[in-house]
Length: 446
Image 1 (cartoon, rainbow, N blue to C red):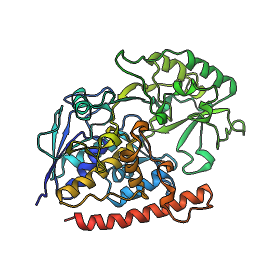
Image 2: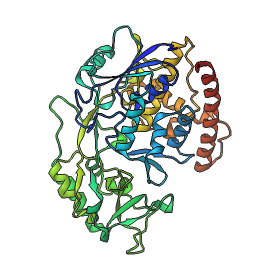
Image 3: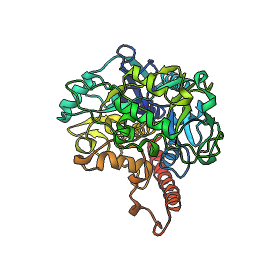
Image 4: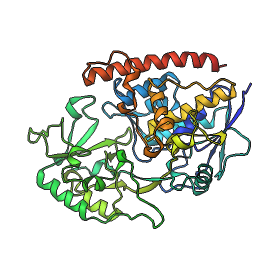
């Protein structure tokens, strides 16, 4: 027997994760998705949980911050992680997926779930008098964005993000490319490396500096998230900045020379068939003709055929510490919850995690349980603490990283070197979450 009904607006990573979690616990879920009735500037299908910018769900290393988050989400039965493992493609220590299989699978699992009703429609405001999770993501429609602006009294509900290009595998020039993972870690065929010498790199930087970019609209401000800056914006901060970022050559040896290249562009498989590769970290707002011209200056891509060029789009999020309660419900409208990038987390994995957190708290509400969040000495708790407990004046979207963990909440870290410290945090965080999860699941599962 159902214990309640919840409306979820948006079937992206956060909405899909939340819908599945609640449906598995006898909650009737109505999932509202506007595509294909109304499309976004970046999505290419009407499938749920479509990955737009990248096909990576980040590191699987147990002692990495994303790895800790994955482990906790796995204990709670994450749909996103389970599906990601089913359709994974080689990516070294990262979990990368076949995008089409990933979104198709999640769409089928949710559409066929007996507790999920899917409505293909655009909502411009939440259903009246219903518990509702708004997870419309970074490409929220104008209607729901206006409602959010009115509800939160916010003037600026966006920042800018950019998408990396994808190329056809058969167009790569293997005379100027080699397979390798940094420092020989993981699958050596996970990345195709495109080296550049100093002269080639300098010519590339000069071309970026003079290239035409897509300008913002007159009524919009350019506000880029630090962790997802366009390469031309990174290059503008210093001539060698890209060599210390997306084009860093460390840990790689060019087999043609036996030496480390001056700079390297890495390509990662987009699908299991390895017929398409994305340029890792090469988000861009260059005009399309400029992208083709400049990226073909990379020797290995001199005849590259682009399956998708980079583009720029508006991302929408609220100042969560200012407008959300600790349970992710909206101040002044406690039946409305926000999750995903709309709440100010950055990244696919983090969006799914935020959707899972919202589902925890909605289930507690339906079960008439007191709000009890994962503690801050867990990955999920640390992410929640960033979203709802940061300084509102300094709030920015964030990925999951070790800086979100308060080391004072962990035991025995004094005097440990970086690797040992992170290993200890990982072990303790997972143990802490396991204790929390056992109690939560025992109380809230029927």
